[in-house]
Image (cartoon, rainbow, N blue to C red):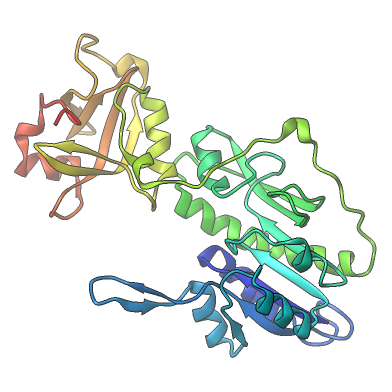
Length: 327
């Protein structure tokens, strides 16, 4: 069984590791598996020194002594020709970052199998984990599907749901889902390869679409309800992060919580106004929102280290009564 793996970020690493661990005959297939290529993005320069940054998938593939191919866009004729030369039986995709053309999708006899981090057809697209948190979903999960030319529209082979914890961020939830996806793939592939699975078409009436996040998405709009802003802080961790301004400097909000309506006093304060609360015998920073208050639990002023609200107030007590994002 000649297999190509396509992936780029850390989310894809557990799947690559899982596939590498079942290559021997009798593990995933009777004849065994040969990973003939690990396809990932080209290396990128980063930082002031412009040093080369490898994708997490490339780093792990090299550690596993697997062949790495970094072709750039697969639509280029020379890359399609190389893919035909490799002649894969199966392509497994996890957060690769490219839309695959028909020539790629039809090249392996068992198709291209994708691991998507949502319960499709909900949250198709580039940011399914953040979208689930932003929507206030109580659960999300992983879908194994056979890819087609649409964006996450392919027929489904398997799904597994997990709850979203109240303190889950995109980072923590993504880590959980990466291992769920790897396990589910290993359970699903033998049945798919043996012909025991019939793909289930997605219900288009239930489909929702996500978009690629942008840096400006993390700028706080204090006119929004506190509950929405608390979700944004979680959804935009680790990227693009969530921030406001104070005295002309960026103030990053690393951890926050929406307060219950009963705790939301001073209804005449403008949105963004900072007030002082005491929680568990410690001082807390609360910010007036369009509805309710957002308690800032961990913040970081530009050029400074991250601090709890109580620590921050020791050095910056004048933040109380300020209006954030007003400069």
